[in-house]
Length: 253
Length: 81
Ligand SMILES: NC(=O)c1ccc[n+]([C@@H]2O[C@H](COP(=O)([O-])OP(=O)(O)OC[C@H]3O[C@@H](n4cnc5c(N)ncnc54)[C@H](OP(=O)(O)O)[C@@H]3O)[C@@H](O)[C@H]2O)c1
Image (cartoon, rainbow over all chains, first blue to last red; front, side, top):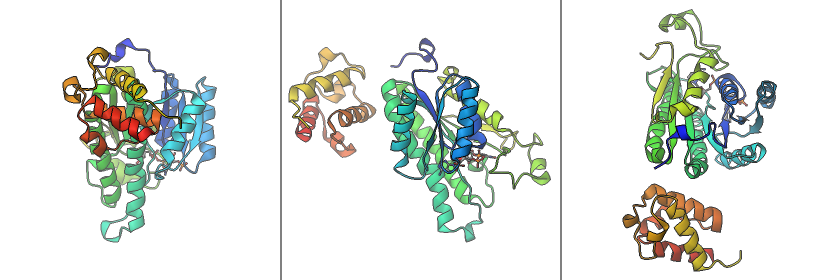
């Protein structure tokens, strides 16, 4: 049986990897984990400059970070991204936040194969392959934290998002199942399900009608999501696994 | 790759299995994984260690066939050479 986490140093001798850490929620998560003392690998796909800015902000605050390019939908990406992150930060990945995600909204009757496939490949298959790769080191280290960024769209139907909702619902059940498989190795696997958060992803959607439907009457901030991820990655969350934490201003309640 | 001896593999496998719980002294070639309380997750981890160390890929099907420590050592040694 693994030691209670309270007995060990925290953060453990590892680094954190945030996929899609260059903008939006991922960038806020990278900053929050760095503030907790984790060296952070900031993964991005196209936004090298934005990722560089996140790294610079972390360094300015006294933390350590590197930017690592990789398309999470590419099956070869995990090996390369992990190798680079672990080499440059000099420690195994012991915290993984699967945050990279895209939307390709369309009503199901007119949803194109490419729209379906891209969303499943990025939001679901990518998280699976990064998780599989991360578990190698975490199981050996007998400790680890995996947080998957799902969505309220996984829990409540959102017309136009059958692909996205299916991918995120799949991600939640993947989270729960893996949590059960690896719990006895001291590795926790949880999901965070944000509602409407003000980022590039939602900038075209957030208007008066939408805000009126949210009990809190406002969109959430990336920091409010990052705070939840930060908790799930913390030492204090050592007994929380297989959970889905909604951060949605009451939208899904 | 230089040849790996059965003794080397045996030593590494015992070390890995001991890290999953049982006392190294209780692990003999005849011990079954069941007796040692080595479960499927432990075997997955053993397969990863073996892959990293000897470049031998053990698939789920291979692992399912294995009942004793000796059988695992035989298979790994055979594939490694
Ligand atoms: N915003 C919301 O209201 C909301 C609500 C629920 C759930 N979520 C989820 O939260 C996560 C982050 O969303 P966000 O709003 O922060 O999105 P965002 O502002 O659009 O940022 C997306 C991030 O993911 C990266 N990314 C996209 N595709 C990638 C790929 N194939 N490989 C690697 N990185 C990739 C982007 O990097 P590049 O710029 O380099 O491509 C960027 O850093 C997503 O999983 C999203 O589904 C968001």
